[in-house]
Amino acid sequence: MLQTFETAETRDKPYIIFDPKNNRFEIKGNSLPEDTTLFYKPVIEWIVEYSKNPNEFTHLICSLDYFNSSSAKMLYELFIELEKIKDTGNEVKVSWYYDPDDNLIEEKGLEFQSIMEIPFNVLEKKS
Amino acid sequence: MDINTTFWFFERIQEDNLCMLYSGNFSDEITNKLIELSEYNINNIDALSKMKKKASFLMAECFQNIVRHGEKYKEVPSDGFFLTKNWGGVYYITSGNLIEKQKIKNLKNQLEKVNSLSKEELKILYREVLENSEISEKGGAGLGLIEMARKSGQKLDYLFENKNDNFSYFYNQILLKSDIDELNKIVSDFPLTDSISYHKKMVEENIMLIHKGDFSQDSIFPVLKIIEENLHKEFKDSSQKKKIFHILVELLQNISRHCYKIGDKKEGIFLIGNSDTNFVINTGNLIENKNIKKFKVLLDEINSLNQKEKRNLYLSKLRDRNLPANGGAGIGLIDIARRIISPLNYHFHPIDNQKSFFTINVIA
Image 1 (cartoon, chains in turn yellow, green):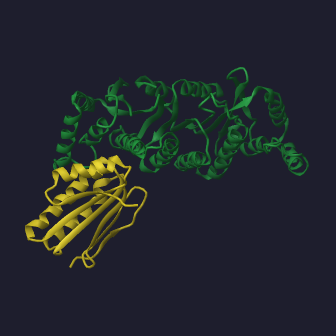
Image 2 (spheres, rainbow over the protein chains, first blue to last red; image 1 turned 90 degrees about the vertical axis):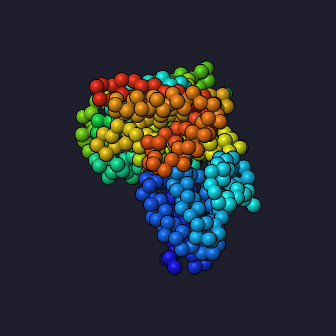
Image 3 (cartoon, one colour; image 1 turned 180 degrees about the vertical axis):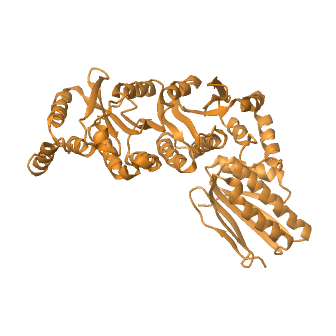
């Protein structure tokens, strides 16, 4: 089993935890790094490895407060890699959370939902 | 503010290593962020980094003048002005605030007195005021002025500028250099009247903040915070705030990715102001002439699309895995265009054979 992947949250980088042992997959916070590719490279690489031999059920929770357009491209990459889990016969699902008064994040979630081929729920955060 | 405003300022401050201008309200939060941004800027100048403490002190003193003596005057939306710039090895700090005309005489007397004293005499006066004088109800008693003169090692440079029948602006400018003795030899080529003309332009065109300099991530953050703090007051709707924030991030990061680099500096200029209930945002930076065509084609394409087409173009760029994530794809510009009420107004101003000044103006 892969080691847990975790990043510290900063003002321009999100908190990410991928923990197969406890079946916890989460991204939250802000994402607007100066070099988006550099930041997301290990994230994507981890997911590529994981998707080859995933848990029976993978549920990724995204509750981002803000992300820029180059982060959107990297998130798309990440979701594409997650889609591959389906090919292994296992289950994968994304839950995308937005604040009730945050149209931007809601809209971005709906956009991803419209182009991804895995269950992608866009949900209002409960206060 | 329109697209021409960018170049108006750029032309005047292009030789500055950095220049930041703020016109508006001075809350504690904004004051702190302005100091943070200035400190970051000073830190980046080798010769000045040792003076960070002194500069911070002087800035804080200026802000206290603005807050304490600046008159709350409801019909005038912008009641304070602050400028810092680094040019020709000198760091300038300028502040301006409204003052009731009847109080000018007293302030002038204090200024003249401070300016007439030697270093030793200032020290004595400082002690005297501390120990004896009844402190005026706003807590001033000229102590701030004395301290400014002592810490900066210069005569106070000031001007009063008529605002209306009852009010004038009180402007004051301090120069900092790592070597104070050398400072006394400098005849400033940047007179206070230049700062005042910038402030006038900002008030006339409703401009809140202008930042010219390095646009690496560390300097973007305090800028974003200052604006967020202002947005906080303007909007109850947090979606609107988020939208403006998003447009700012995309435009500022665009500068740092696409600008013509001088050394390893990512230089540009950024302006934000109001028009009616909307925000106007301008950015400008030098680009290589060979890139102009590429940008033109992209911008014209985006501007020709309707809302649905913009969405589709955005999604197709999002899904195109051959495009680099770190800019170049135009995905940021497309996403901005979906969220503004104006087109992506743009202009290229030729500088020389190699480069041009590229400016974008949007209303959101």
